[in-house]
Image 1 (cartoon, rainbow, N blue to C red):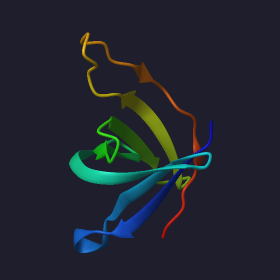
Image 2 (image 1 turned 120 degrees about the vertical axis):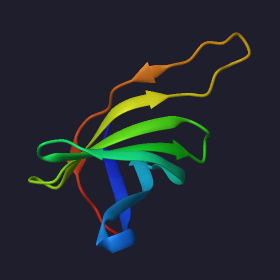
Image 3 (image 1 turned 45 degrees about the vertical axis):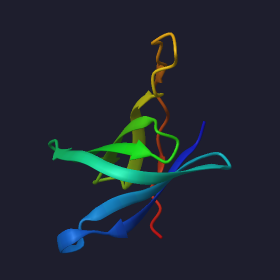
Image 4 (image 1 turned 60 degrees about the vertical axis):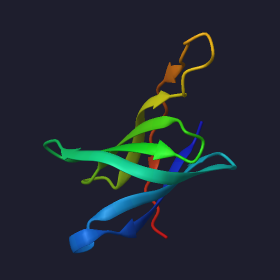
Length: 93
């Protein structure tokens, strides 16, 4: 599965995700819940317009995005689904 991320320049020119693409499927970022830095990475915890939770990792040295966590909203029986995506090149809008 290919993961592509469109971004915009946020506060102070920091690159922020605005859309996540899985092949032809587009998820609009509804809310940026959190972000933090690692040694060469930036992480973003996002809520999509599908009400799912996404954690993306930006490898700043290679300009590549990873989907590190995906969690669907709870179903009526309380179940959730979590999966890991694959790396793809960064894209800016």
